[in-house]
Image 1 (cartoon, rainbow, N blue to C red):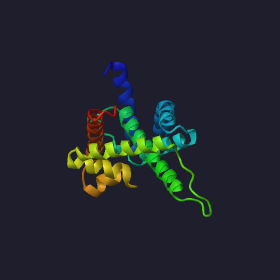
Image 2: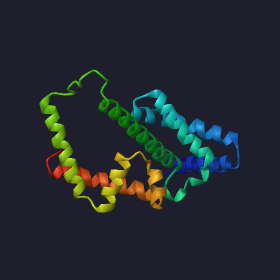
Image 3: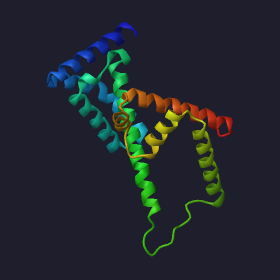
Image 4: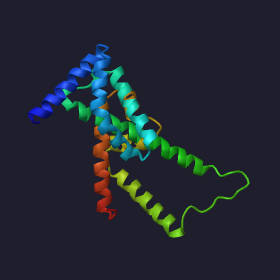
Length: 192
């Protein structure tokens, strides 16, 4: 890290400490520094400005509530905030996809279901689903379980960490490694 970036991070670390002591001015300074790059990142991930603003709001509320959760040993303040934002965005995307799937699963009374795609698309989707199931079966047990819980349950990674009594970073690492191994397994099967 160059001297300018180090000084910038040191300022942010100081602001976090001051936020923990109740300083509104420190929060305003941090807010002014991070929102200009957090908001576009959230908007890119979510594709919706209002949801992006909500995700940024959630992250900044967490900063106000628990500024002490920042660990300088694990990276910069910006990296810490970016990881939190990404996690919040992924939680929102998972929740959004579950709502859409639930709506699709409930046909309107009196109306038949319209086919969602052509037959070849349906077959391809089933083949891809089967490939993912086979690839999941090749993962080590903890990674497989973590991926299944992270993507198919309604719990966040933080909730999983609390339930399993492991650090949040452990859950995040299992997800990251699991996805990496899943991608490699799918590539071996020809699903690049």
